[in-house]
Amino acid sequence: MSGQVLLIEDEPNIIEAIKFILSREGWHVHTHSNGVDAADVVRSRAPDVLILDVMLPGRSGYDILRELRDDPATAALPVLMLTARGQSKDREMAERAGASRFMTKPFSNAEVLDAVRALTSVA
Amino acid sequence: MSRDTLTGSRIRERRVAQGVKQADLARKAGISASYLNLIEHNRRRIGGKLLLDIAEVLQVEPALLTEGAGATLIAALRETALDMNAPAELDRVDEFAGRFPGWAQLLAECRGRIATLERTVETLTDRMTHDPHLAASLHEMLSTVTAIHSTASILAEPGEIDPDWRARFHRNIHEDSARLAETSRGLVTYLEADDASATQTGSPQEELETLLDGIQHHVPELEDGGRVDQALKRVGQGASAAARDILQHWLERYAQDAKALPLESFAAPLRRYGPDPVALAGALGADPARVMRRLASLPAEILPEPVGLAICDASGVLRYRKPLPDFPMPRFGAACPLWPLYHALNRPQVILSRPLVQPGRTGHGIWADALAVPQGLAVNDDAQYESHMLVRTYQPGATDAPPREVGVACRVCPRDACTARSEPSILSATA
Image (cartoon, rainbow over all chains, first blue to last red; front, side, top):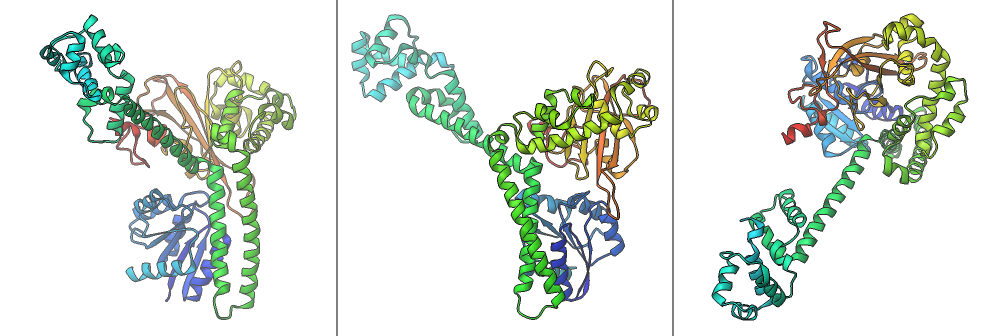
């Protein structure tokens, strides 16, 4: 596998672990940990897949995703959302915001890999 | 048929329930069976001595025959059927309550218990959603567990890992496990220590707001250079540990603000400009956000007119709220996303000043000044912003600027077509 993954997450050790497992599979992983300018970073990096945490400093992942979906350049970008809450309304909010996939913490490395593979094969 | 014309039906129900033949009841009451039949089918009115005689034969209170079950019980049964959307025979509810008063009462009481339990569930759900401390702690725990889980999985996989990476992952797990232990301890302490107070008053943030409302957001001892710990002792009396912690930070900032902008410095500019934070900041050479906080803390005898203030952090969570009668602020959860308070976060360091109008409020106009400022210094890092919004009334016609329509919060806002809506309104649901 190869391609660009952008991981926007504020937990440094999750970043490190996900970056490691994806890099090992051949993905080129960029990371960012702030919500405020996350949408701009997505546009400038133009990744193949975006992994986006919901609770970010400065701005929620839902807000960022809504902005990306409103922009034709990023409207079709495959997005995997990560959240610490698995209630149905959180899933609904993610779907409404335009998430391609939704994953609840704690997740396994295999789940992340499967999700990224699935998103890129669809894309 | 109205309830008071059903006396005959109740007599019949009682008689049948007791297994008494119509002819026997008629004979004991001194009337013919055919006349009793007319009464039982509500074709003859009954009262006076005959009613007393029949009640005596049936060994029931006469009132139970004339009034049936209590109006409250009947209403409760009707509401139960409607609440449950059950296909119950509403037109026979009176008959049911009269014939089976014990079961009817039980059913009504069950409905009361269900309602109480539903409220409890709602409160607990609300707390999970809106208690910032609890939500943040749980998020922190789950994130830490995720980091440990992912890292440990990598280390447990077969095959060699670069020694540098291995060492780094071991260090990460060590750090995360220590953090997890600390967060868990803090959460347990919070839940146990706050058990009584938190269930009564909600989150520590709500407790703080109750305390501040109690002192009208003004702390005289800090105006005179008094010590924060003494003010904390007085204001925070009886508060939970978590609420006292938030209160301490609030008092520390109050003391700094009061020292930088003493009460006496406000007198002349206030007379000249009124509670206009922009004009006052210019006149006093002060940070407008600090001026807003000072205005919200001024006693009524100094302030020419009341002001409201909302402060939120960069995630939009309200950390301070002092509402105005003409500009309510939500006690739980997020406020209206159209408030300039939130727009200011998109334009840090710029004062957004404009009139607002809330649906259904036709009194004074509301003027809002909003400003997002960094908290502390940011060195080689992103600044953390917090936003302030001071609201005050203004006379209609005092400005040509069109007012922006805003609400209080989505749940209580009737503006259906609003693009900023995040959840359905209970107002439109009942309309």
